[in-house]
Image (cartoon, rainbow, N blue to C red; front, side, top):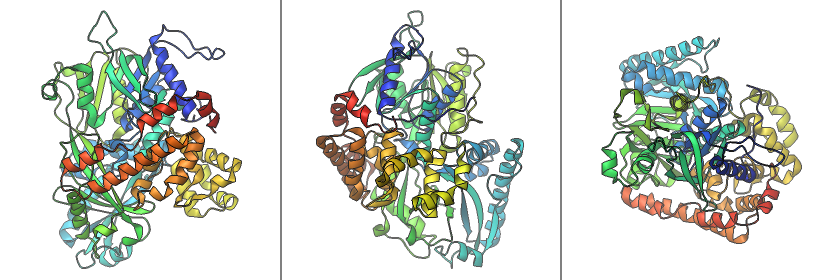
Length: 631
């Protein structure tokens, strides 16, 4: 494939994508650039759901040369995909289940991301497994991790690599363990084992996939909900021929026609499947029918200041609990500690950490730390829902493809569903989904995503080599440059262009100095942010990194976003009030003792003012278009 220049996701790109989706209802006709007319006729593939699997499916299908649309009801990755443990790993627990194939697959995907697909976003991270029983645990855990590393080495050699993507594990005696992680309970642990996996900003990974799909020609739209499914084939009334999509910013409904539709809705699979196939059926009746069945399990994390847990460099801790796995994960400015594993029976739109969840995580963290953490140390929390795939039923054994972690199946003619899985194996899930949807419709359209770097990956190493030059030119320290390269990779010149044009954008935010002012403008002009919450929760991670959830920085951020999006005073106030209401609701939820109370509090305070967005979209388009600095 020829080198493809990354294209910005901005208001103009959104308008163009909506125009292309409208054009799917017209007779097929080639595009006319001079007349500004998009290509008309049905899409080849419409993907519903902009989490990591949906965005990856759009990227995969676009890479095969197909005409693709991607619609997401909220912001990209706003659901489960931005609320993970932010790890890319093989899954040591699957070795205990003797599922070597699954572990090998996950390790292969981990190494692909590290070496080729997203080396700017995914970085090696060492973990320590501390030992209480010196001999027994060292032998048992050591043999498991040896096998883990051997599988990773085999994966690398099969792909022609001359070296491993991450270092081999090593054993630590008691003295070295104290040096490596002084915060661990020195009396309790007699040594440990240090091995490597990798970490990623999950929200940024999803965003990068969506932007990469857009750069390959996909019509990519956030804040666009599928409200119904189309049945436009008179010869096959059961066939799904696309979806009716409602633009949350304008209220407009668009019939998007497609030869094949892929449903990648995660924990929303049950709702979306019922909407597509049984709109008049009750949830109980729908669950008893054939199709994909997904249950939700809640996992929460807390964040605490980096200085509260002493460690040598960047290294995490992993131990097993009676219910789940405990991770102490070093992020840039905070520690993330989790996770839990509890059944979720409330609406899937509003998972929230309760007081009991927080106490559980603190209790298990304090069981391994020498100095106890308290509730006053907790800066923030996040909660996500794991989509747990249940046994798949189908009338025809050939209508489903199931793995240990995910399944792809035909829900109806023209509608393919994919569910289950985990962050690390998103690419495999997406490839399987597109393979399944394309079978019999499109020929000689093999996936190329195993060799196709994401936006910002190509040439990343060249910019790493220029780190000292960037430090000298912009007056940044090494930590700032490394952080920017970790976020943007070889897309960094686009951010630098903003700063060169307006040096004031090169200043840090006054109340969130880890981020530059330019990054807020860039979130709007290149990364598709349309609400304050998009920036606070996913373009940055201020909602998790600061005790005030970023509220002190809101006014400056609104000034920058408002200037780029032509927001009036009323719109800025609506955005601020919606975010403040959400933060307060989340804080109250963290003091409650039950999921139903916590969920109800958060559900009543959506962080984005959709009505304000609708009013803004009704304003003259040229005003917003003129503000797009990279448009």
